[in-house]
Image 1 (cartoon, helix red, strand yellow):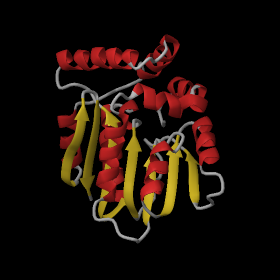
Image 2 (cartoon, one colour):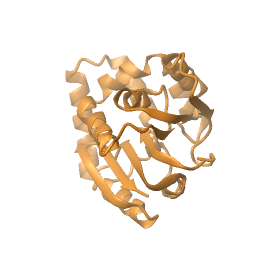
Image 3 (tube, one colour):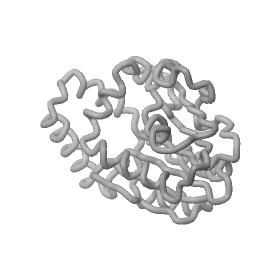
Image 4 (spheres, helix red, strand yellow):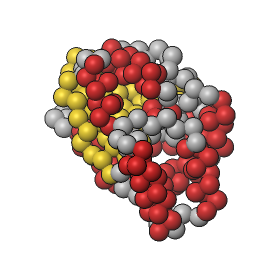
Length: 229
């Protein structure tokens, strides 16, 4: 997970080894959440390989799901945590076509010519102005007609709704049996979150030139946002 400040990045590096297991337990809607994102990417797919950039790629979990459903040509995993990318290298051992880049996505060169740019639970660590700037750069990095899919943690539209999201999430993960030390670690990481509401983020995507902008899935604080270049 790429983050602009070293303390937050250190927390993710600390938890890198068990991050995949934690993610499934900490996202009550895990299958539907990622399933919606994968459905968007698979729409209209053909046998032709796609080029994919994964921002805040972490351990490569989301990219591994994409690779499992369709052929991928270029794949670049960009993240600010070397420990996270070490886990990704272990996941993809034997695949030589993957580019691993340790970089802060707020200022990294995103390259160009991507068919799909994805991000999963990473961009909400950025200040709002940095989110908007990143959306602009993502659009420029995509091929015409290319797709941006952001499987994200979002804020509620009001403080009351946001408090409801936080309360329900804690209730849900505790019902799923997440141990309290794991809950505490998650809350430590989330103290660096700068989540933005869905409506505002869709507006930002449209303002930088994305079309077919949509929120195709939402379950309280988890949402899948997308747009085409």
